[in-house]
Image (tube, rainbow, N blue to C red; front, side, top):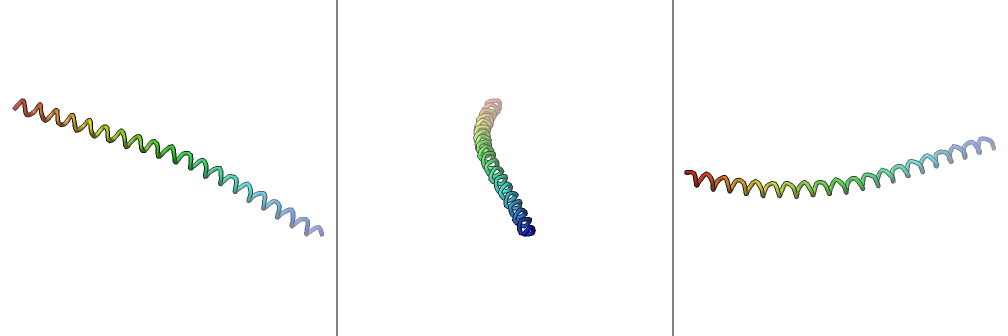
Length: 72
């Protein structure tokens, strides 16, 4: 009878540990999902910035080319 109780206590402890692990995994998943969304937003902003930078560079290049042509 004592062995049975001891086994039940160990099984209960295992279930508690598994439940704790499952809760930690859910928390980690939610945290990762939150940061993933934040990273995606930042990447989108960087892409926007790069597009604007490319447009500005293109305009500067055109103006420089016009200046060079006028100086010739």
